Image (tube, rainbow, N blue to C red):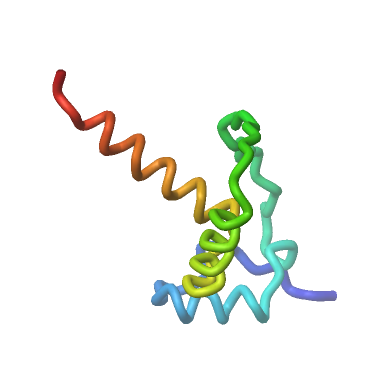
Length: 91
């Protein structure tokens, strides 16, 4: 029979050491362990479609490949950047 460990018996460690510790240990091995009730919910997003000239799509694809960012993420970041600029303008 395995001796039950307590989470409080785990010494203070750096993030790297703690990550290695949990790589070789299971939470179930510790007394009083229970799964948390946290739920991570993404804020709702709305899908839009837009038509672009093939030339524009090629430019986007080239920049996407150059930067290593997915095409949709790249366009999304450009739109958000422009919206931030507009939002900072005073009328």
